[in-house]
Length: 214
Image 1 (cartoon, rainbow, N blue to C red):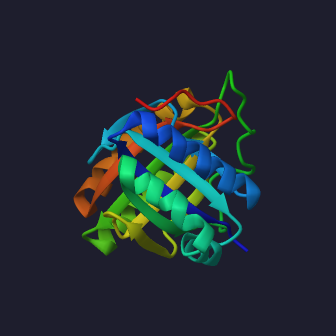
Image 2: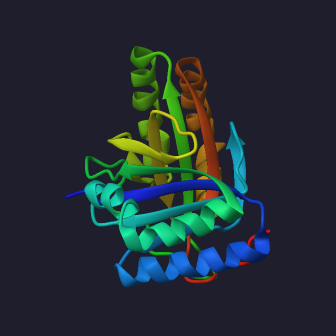
Image 3: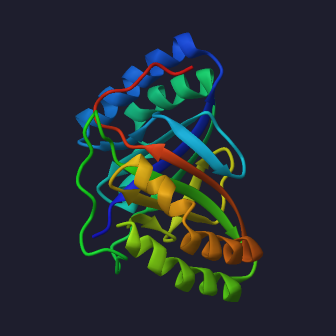
């Protein structure tokens, strides 16, 4: 069964009190066995609307991503976030279908974290978007990409969202960036821009170390 995720983009408006939320959220996630895939981290805005902090939390399933949000013990954590940040949060379904690469990239280290693309997409021309999906297969395979989220079910829990969510893992940030700006992917990107609007960032994965939010 595919994992579920909380896909979170936010702007911190009270950095001092946000630390209290961040610690409470981390403790809640750890107590339930959830895993931070992305937690803050350096990022580069590639397309669309920018939020200044980005998080991806892995839960056992999409159903867990929905139900955990409504747990009574989570409401205090949620209220802490709402009082210190403006957030867009969605529950999204993980991907367990065919991959462009034979194996996922190795787990990152503090010195060399994984790189990720996080994307929110509204498809405006579904038929043309299929051409984009076909065109991106070769460059993604060339750079060892691995889909963590690829379409699938989603539900906006807070703020605003888009109709399609995508998360792609690479062995490191340099590889993620090289893939995006490669000639092969730029050709595919031109097709995607004809068929959709998107918010896309390139970001480092979480390896247990994080700078304080700014």
